[in-house]
Length: 306
Ligand SMILES: Nc1ncnc2c1ncn2[C@@H]1O[C@H](COP(=O)(O)OP(=O)(O)OP(=O)(O)O)[C@@H](O)[C@H]1O
Image 1 (cartoon, rainbow, N blue to C red):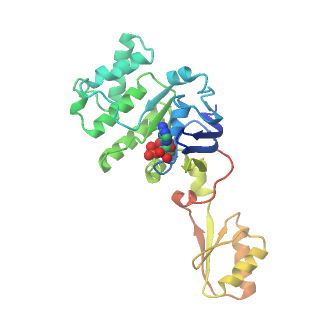
Image 2 (cartoon, rainbow, N blue to C red):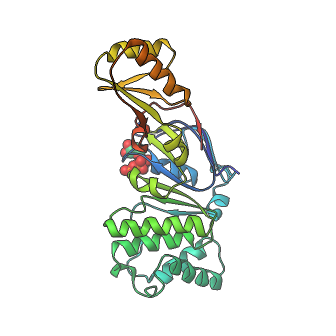
Image 3 (cartoon, rainbow, N blue to C red):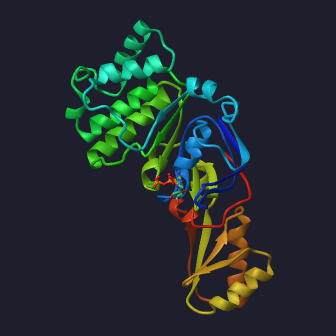
């Protein structure tokens, strides 16, 4: 089943800011990174998916449900970890997470059991009766994660889960998120402005910029299918570009390098043939593996399916 799908989703706030613009994307279950700079529209998308914010135009589905009309059903099946600190400092973690379980409709005893369980999963079992106000930032982030997990959701939406953490804390949180995805079989949407982080733990990525979709694809698809050949000749670059273009190859130039998409093995032969035909001194011909960060700088497709 499609985890999330949006069709021409647009959100214009009352102050005129367009936070999302014509966003169409389908996301399959798994650990999905939602990446974009601050202000790109990630939180707005999450809030629309939860039915907390209404889109101006367009539509969305979460687990096949419509946030505009079925927000309650969505919240019963989705856990949400907000970006900002929203924790009551004078409550113990166990109390707070139990309360959140009750809010999700769990009976009292079940909520208490599930809270202990969720706090165990995030590594706070021993500390669960201490007041949250005395917790470190990393521990607070883990309480936020535990409250999102308490009602055993099918999908977790995590908004900047590594915010405010030091490098060791970030690694620990990313490891935890990865484990939740692989051990519990829960799907996760992980929002981050740090591509390098989410890339490590996600099956697929959605990149947005200025409210628009830049790219959405599986991480594997992004790193393997996008290979290009880099060609460098000691002289005659322009001649070679013209020749390759004449052969119908979609060539781009990056400094001294001519970049040619690697369609199949014949691409090598066509380049070598062109170099030989022009009698140019070949300096370099090798496969250039795109880094995901580079891919996100390329043009946006109309709509993409993950
Ligand atoms: N309630 C609101 N009213 C007006 N403008 C808003 C509102 N919420 C967000 N915005 C604006 O919409 C744009 C997208 O914000 P959003 O919070 O969705 O981005 P983001 O990618 O989550 O960034 P961040 O990580 O900084 O929260 C920003 O320009 C922001 O200032």
